Image (cartoon, rainbow, N blue to C red; front, side, top):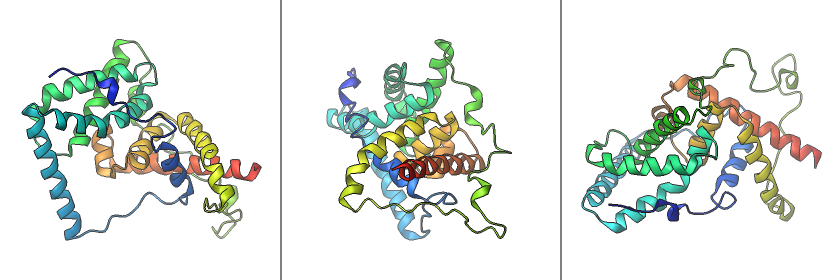
Length: 253
């Protein structure tokens, strides 16, 4: 089955939900490491339903179902471009995604459902991005999966706390419910997108996967090949930097 995947790119950067997701990320308290999923039968049922849906979609794809193909491309092409840019930069993102799609369809017969289809595709893309970086002699360092500054960098400036550990300078509250707040949303999205691109690669990748793509922590660890502890550190520090950027912007305003 041969297709041109560029047509499935979807919305542009300003309309793909990235800015809104980053704004929600920046509103979280620095100590927040993400929503806690309630354990129980409902989660198990949702997981089983998702696995069954993936299996059915794979069967349709293997049978050459064009509607199934269009559904998968519509669902994943824009997130794949976003992740490719995060790992390797914009220059090779399209090529990496094209190579990933080819590898996905070549390897579908070997998909065993041990992870979600989305996680499986993202893992292939991550590996392709590293291969592309090596082939093109671009900078996609092995250490991007590690938190190189893990031992020293505070997530929040210690000067913001008093001697008892309470806030001396608490985070600035923010709501977008006012008309003025809603008008600021697009500009804030631009600010946060710029700050996201300035994060170290590991923090940027984890933020994109967790807060933009909505992947749970275990899937992020599988996609990037990192430990749960490292994922938490990268997420915490990345979110803290985005929140600090938002505070600086709002304070200047």
